[in-house]
Length: 340
Image (tube, rainbow, N blue to C red; front, side, top):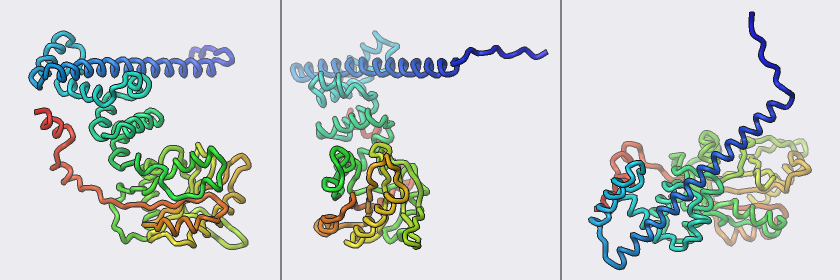
């Protein structure tokens, strides 16, 4: 005879789900707390090493001995290699203000910090990448990709009319959402690609494309059909932005920007707002991605346009073949050479 499953009280499932969320939140807070304490410890060690080196001229041999003695005293801790001690010194040198370390720097993992210190030299840019990593939860590989692609220098640089066509603060957020140029280094395409080929490749590599577009973009479709006045029209790419709460229409052009592109995009946005936009949505935004653009021509084209449009260039870069990548020294190899 089969045993009957116990009858659960009403509301049990919701109660269990609530408890699971609380446990997950507590575990995350505990992990973040441990990480903060570890980063602060590393920063203090780095500060002490830095001071000794300045006052007494400690060299690499002393650092090696210090690492040996610390590992002997604390065998359960893995962070006391000579290499890691040098990174601690670099951390203290890069961020001399302990308050900044407590409030900002300690929010991301140690491996992320090492990459930022290695790859970024400007203090303001370092802080920006730390804040973006905290905000978006970037993995270390994603962080490295964003630094290598120069995201800090591209974000918010598109030519737009957002200040005239969107209310504040949405206009600022929309401006910051766009980049110039967009870099498609994941396609391996030639420069003479046609627009439909580019569109198909971007859709085929949608995950990489979304990463390059930035957070908040949700893919709706490609060649999205609109019927206006009994005629058919097709949008190259349609997205919905979760933070801006609006549709984003992207048109791809494999040549330089032309003034008529702005008029066509204005028409598309009017149609999307009329046919697709929900009453609670904000005004739809258009992005024209061109192979190149003349700043003055773009500004004139957008000057009297009534709907929010941004124009950015894109770059196709050829990634190295895997067999060639294997012959190049890694970051770790270069670090070891520098420490000798």
